[in-house]
Amino acid sequence: MSDHDTRGLIRLAGILWAGAAEADLRTWRSLPGEQHAAELPAPASGSVRVELLSRSGRVTASRTVQVPPDAPSLIYARSTRDAVLRIEAARLTR
Image (cartoon, rainbow, N blue to C red; front, top):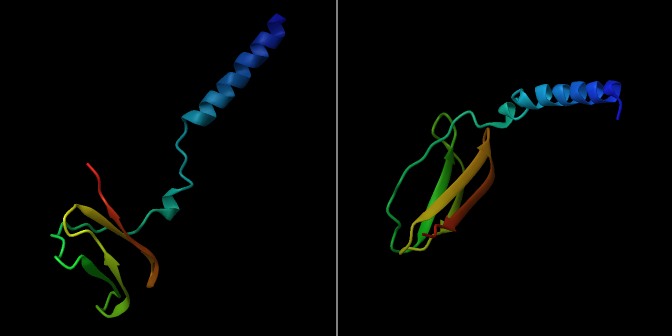
């Protein structure tokens, strides 16, 4: 490999490195505007009703999910504006 080729490869590596070192901001627009979390005891029935409220407090959507009453669980709800996209419950393992 010639000295000229070596310098070319070093320049190319420098360009690639500089591009990789910059933050990728393309995904910031997809982050939620708000996040909420709460820790609650699981009901004995294992049935949890999740309601999506509008800014005025009106219920715009609701869904009931099952959680194990004897183990920690996570209920995940995701919405955009007033439309529910997904509500899931998952048992957490230790």
